[in-house]
Image (cartoon, rainbow, N blue to C red):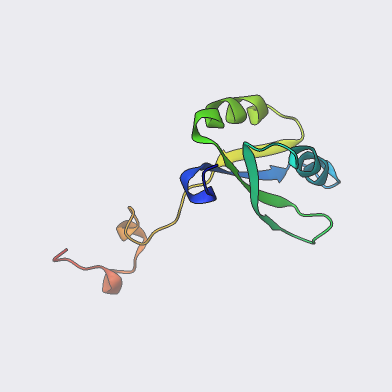
Length: 98
């Protein structure tokens, strides 16, 4: 089994308040191809989760839940100051010689 860094990561949120995300996460507990990397929110009722999926199953996972009326799913994109953010930096923070 690959570790979470080698898997495709997704952010999953409930579209509405309630137990939808908790129920979804409970249903995934026994799936060896999915890993709950982290949750955000109260321990018994998180509102957001980060999931890691085996790379070869990522497209199917994304497609399966893309049109869900209960969940929002998107690929997790790592943030980096070195990745296309120069336009967002204040003029004094930009390096004109880079």
